[in-house]
Length: 616
Image (cartoon, rainbow, N blue to C red; front, side, top):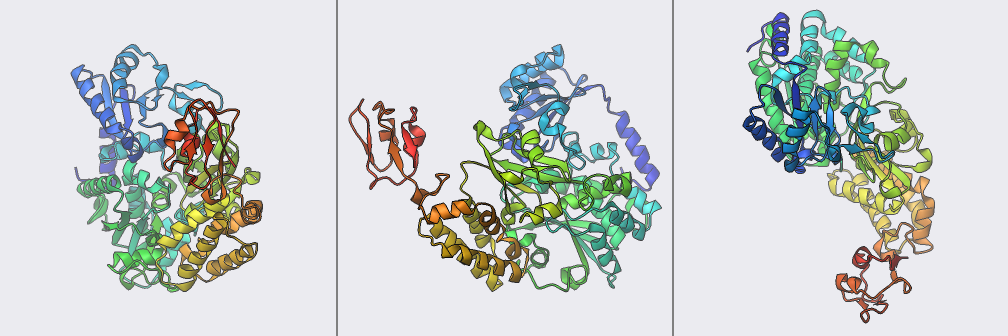
């Protein structure tokens, strides 16, 4: 089907909707990467076979969707129209779901989600606390559509925003609407999107480019990947609208090669959009033409920086360059170029369809709309969370995240990826927006959020993230290349009990120099974990340096395993678990630990069932 005008799109949408009965039972199976890793593909295939074998096709639809967000509970199955929510579904559960829930309308209680805060079993998806407190504007359709079929996207008003701008709005009006919305870039720095578009629009060049930055490299971050896997057309539509507004005829999606499912779904989406007349020459019968190509990145974290990404696209080494000139002035192959993050592009159709005024009412005065975070770490509900800007960390961690596992205390949260700062428990009521996070020493970044409990060593955390940025530094500028390395070595010595009090002043000085003089955002933000842990957890640094002790019992060189004689029954399980033969003793008698042989691996501590081994 090729759409040649907006009325064709309206007709197509009506036709597609007429084929689907909203009252008909529909089994949706999440097949995002997270659920696939837990066996969702086999679950989906079993559903397909069993529905056919039972002759249920006339009564039951099966839909394979993208990521629903609640990754820790996958594979997820949601049954429409009531939205019955089953979690951790296995192949062996499929037959029971069909026979009991689909045919007899009975709920299978063991597959229900149990709220860790209340102990209550939840039946319906919209009542699950993880979803209830969210506002899923750009991720809401992930669990409703099949990302490999454009018809699902069109049925939910897909590409109506594109038709609107092509036939009812001038490029200047589009940019003005985006500016009024207050949308800021979702990739890191939070630069106003409309202003960025205007700079590119006003650049004096006939040839311009736009780029979707999908080079998501933060440890534990998977927001962009999941959006591209689950709803690729929302990103494509946003890009086409942006290209129209800025006067570009060619665009690129720079996506990591480690995202095979995202690339697969993007490739399908591009092909379908072209076949339907929504991409390529004379889009929707207009005078506007635009094409998009996929470029696979090789996995360098620094290529998330705009100028390094452009260098990689051009076939050069992915290294940043000094700015100005900015990409909007001189970017890809020397031409004006606009680069936005995946989530930024996905917001564009929403703003055009619902209006800047509607969008600007969501969030705070300076941080509009929603933000998607990957909530990971020491948290009960791991997954993707889309919340209105301004929500507190407390609500994120306890009402959406379900709190800290095993009754542990919340200690800190790092926002903004490996270059983000660590925010302590005493700031748990901090609103999540660009300005508040920056004042606290952290940043919004692209949306990574790592929760830490009382068993986390903050010195070791700073060391870990510096090891990442050290390895990912392109090495082009001296402050980043040498400064991060020096900071890492100081932290490494502190975790080994070799630190000095004077190291703390040197760390601060080095961090500030790297922050102020590095060429790109990687170096400029890499010191954040160091600066914030020094600021909020100085006592932990002093314990490592003065007392030669790790309060969290994490740093191996500063801990000691000892036996509690009264609790040891001589079962010798610890003896067998020890890889160095450091534990000895007669059976049914208290064992002994030879500290000279002990390598502090913790195998004995994990193996002991009687809590007879303590960490000091």
